[in-house]
Image 1 (tube, rainbow, N blue to C red):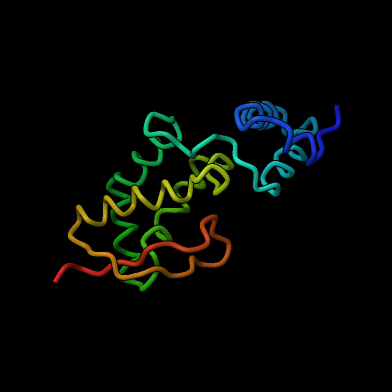
Image 2: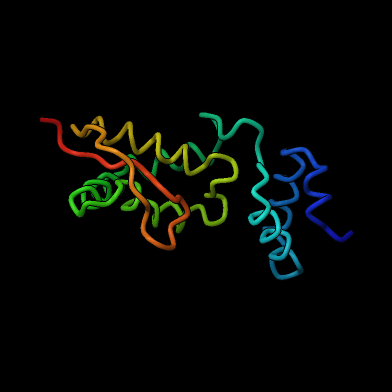
Length: 146
């Protein structure tokens, strides 16, 4: 069966998620083309975004709250970048194509980063563009609480 953008649009978010997972398991047998089509479509793979019990959310929390994650958040902040810029490479390395904006995954990562930064004694400063090549396009910037 040839998958087209029209067929993707007709599917439920859950059906697209199943298709995506099956394609991921068969990358060498045409799965990459389906993954690329789904990723470029902008269509969600979940209805309503990631839940707190979602394995992707749980893994993002583990990565962001880890010692390395917290260190990278602070380093990015000290370099004048959004804190997410520090830890996003770890998310991409660990989660691969499961970390993306289509299911609000980047928004979820940003909210986890916000919780960690507040815990570390920072306050929201504003928003800024993420570095070129990032999955997220913009993210929060932080400053030490005064």
